[in-house]
Every structure is written in structure tokens, then in C-alpha cells.
Amino acid sequence: MTRTNGSSSRWSKQRTSTTPAQLADVARLLAYRLDQDGKPPSEDERHRRRDLRIRRRDNGATQLTGELTALCAEALQSVLDSLGKPKPAEDGTADPRTGGQRMHDALQDALLLALRSEKLPDCGGVATTILFLMTPEQFQSGAGLVATGHGRHVAVPEALSLLGDSRVMPVVLGKTGEITAYGTTHRIFSENQRLAMIARDHGSSFPGCTEPPSRCQAHHVTDYSITRRTRVDDGTLLCGVHHREHPQRGWTCQMINGIPHWTPPRWIDPSQTPRRNQAMHLQEIMLPV
Image 1 (cartoon, one colour):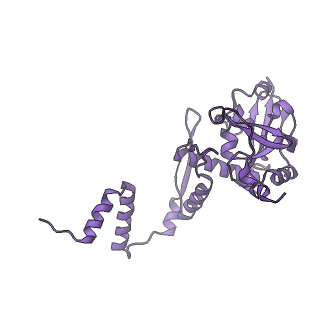
Image 2 (cartoon, one colour):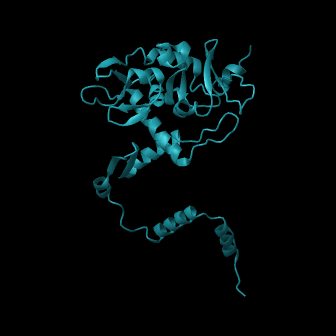
Image 3 (cartoon, helix red, strand yellow):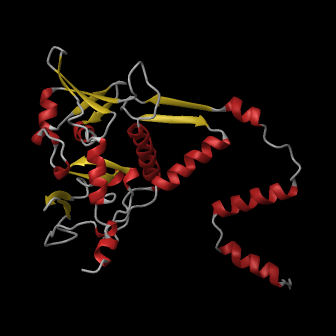
């Protein structure tokens, strides 16, 4: 009969609840403790091996490969941890995105934040800008795929959803390739307009969302191709996730008394009662009348 002491018994219990990833972390920690005087990583070696490659696939998607320095990896992880958190619905429904999809969306939102900051260096003599090349028919119908300045193809609704933000510009081409229209500051929400929406919305206007204004995109409540106007009484702030996914999730927005209200799909609220994002206005609610 084999005797076991208290510590081995505790380890036995822990083993039954340890995941492979946790076991790998323990193994790395033990290896470090056994050889703390081992050869430290060389900063010159890390610097020499840094690499990032962008490979476009035949289907239009892009694959990223590379090796990041410790500092670059830490900066990236910090950004992804901040922007890639799950976003459950107001009723508690879990975020339908996988962990990998959340990381992808976080990286996209971070890049769009950098573009909106207008602090990036010039590129070819002009401010760094995303260009969308579309036909008049695509602009009117909101259907099909449009080419970007780098030759990638993006769905028209996704391209049009970004037109309220600076540094994103459409160029409408005629049948022979002539420029028939192009983006102007009238389509892009100005700094003063964004400040006015910040004062009203306090951040993302989507119900239950608590993203601050600095992480929000400007959204045309009624599509610009219909109204041909960019005004605060028909605009609102949205985080990147809800800006992209509210149509797929079945939510629609409307202005009621100058305030953005969101109507949920029938499976969430059979009465489809428009609602305001109260999470950003708790202080107003609690103020005495």
C-alpha cells in the first residue's frame, strides 16, 4: 500500500482540474526556476528577427505572419485586451463572436482609431486615408463589392458605414473611369459635430454599450446615400462592433425628439419598443427633478 502525504493528495486533486494550457504554464515556470541563470534572450536577436508580412489570398482575405519583439507584442496585447472584450447584448445574450473574431475586430477598431486621430504621417503627399472606388449605381443601391486604394474588395454596405468618419473617402467613378464624385467634409462628421454628439450621447448610443467617445465611430442614422446630409440630428456615436453588426443582429436606429433610440429585433422584444442606452445616462436618471 502506497502512503500519500497531504501535499501529494492536494496535487492529485489539482491534477484533475488542470487544463493542458495551465500545465504548460506550470512546466515553463518550473523550467525557469530550475535554470534561472540560463542564457537571457538577446535584445539584438529579438530586434534582428522582428518581421511582419501581409499575404493576400486568392479569395480576397489576407493572412498575417511574423514575429514581434516583446515590446511590440505587449503593446498589441494591451490594445486587443482593451478593445476585444466580449460585448453581450443588453438582455444578457452572449457575444456571438469567437475569441479569434473578437481579436480581429479589436485590431480593425484600433487601426480605425489611428486613422481618425489624424496623427499618422502623410502617405504620398496626402493624409493617410482609406479610399473606396465605386460606381454611381453601387453608391445608390448599396450593393456589390467596391475596390479599395490597395486593390482589395469590400462589401458596399461595410464601406458606406464608415463614411461618417474622417480619413475614409469614397471616389465615385463613371463608366469610362472618370471621377463623377468624391468624398468631402460634408459627408464626414466634423470635429464640432462629434463634440456635440459626445455631449448628447456620452459614448456609444447602442443599448447596454459602455464604450467611451474616444472608441466610437460616427454613424449616419439614415444612410447618407438617401439623405445627402451629415447632421447631428441624424447621427450618433457607436462602438466599432455595434457599428458593424447591428444590421446583422436585427437592430435599427431612429431619432426620437433628437435622441437616438434603438429598436430590438422581435425575438428580443415582441413589442419592439424603441429604447435609449441608459447605461451612459445613469447620472442624469439619478439627478433630482
